[in-house]
Length: 491
Image 1 (cartoon, rainbow, N blue to C red):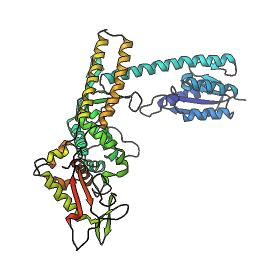
Image 2 (cartoon, rainbow, N blue to C red):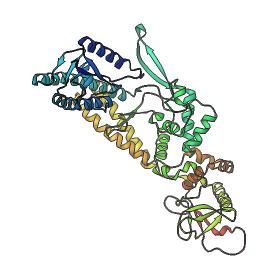
Image 3 (cartoon, one colour):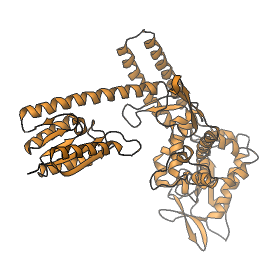
Image 4 (tube, rainbow, N blue to C red):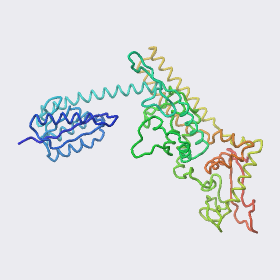
């Protein structure tokens, strides 16, 4: 009776998705099975999945389940490392396969009888050598990645906004590279940052870029679009560009991990660190996920920090009354004023206030804490550079270098998080445009979300006065408007 065997193949990295590696392994496995006179009961292949850290391998899992059910008595694989790189997986699999009396045959190796103590010991020892090789490789890769990060070098493809300049040595081999600004792309990145800081919505920004036929990042880089996604700007792609620390000349190492580090980059910045920090704070605000401020139609609605009911303090919303949009108290309906009258009054009061000599004082916010934090960030970055110089000059040991570097990088992460929380809330560019002879023209052009942010930055306060009666038409005294400074005094 012919022995029924399972064929398994795996390759760790298949960047192009061609599956050539697993195809070759499977082909050679079938050739060996035919030479031995066996029968292939099942075929399993995991492509582009590393086994070192125990990543889920769907076909490997199916292999073990079928072995448990007695579907075959032997596994044919290219090398033992194709089956296991991870100690835990190897030990568990040897235990399972030995109980089910399943042996292993390696195309580039020996037959391993897992039903005997010597066979199991041999498989464990061979596997341990594979694990050691993988761990050493992983350590080298991690060390090289850290060195690139500390040098500010990019990893992977060039980012949108820059272009890569390669330097070649003898024989045409690339020896190094650097990234410089791409004028057209950098201008788009700068525009995105500045317009979002001026409180334009992500959706409108994306629509405008598409209308102007600006190539999105993947198209600009000549890469294939992701499956099922059109080659256009979207709110998510605009947000992705806007949130990058790379925009201000920063590089992130180990993004999202506990040891995440934000380091100086070797490429030139497009915007300032202050602009980038402010924008990240704005786009990370949890209120954006619930208020949908980018789609706001009425800038005084559901904004209790600037507009409320004078009787109960409730938020305002807009409803139709007698055929007219009307601001009313949201929880109780105890106040109400026609929207067009209130908006007209707000515009006249705001523009009048902006025309006064001290108008710029309205927008002054204490940025002392943020500036002090940025100063400390620069000091820590300087210490890191000094440590690298001292280590290169053999003034400190390797242990001292790594211990001090780890301490300073931990502090750097803390400081970066602090500065995101302490930046001012209003871009200086918008303030400059609103104070002066063109204030009315600029006000008309603002989106509702931008008007709401502007009013909040001015310390604007509005209340609908309850109990006003007498005659048709609008009574300005039924709407109370004033301005307050950060310290609570009237402005």
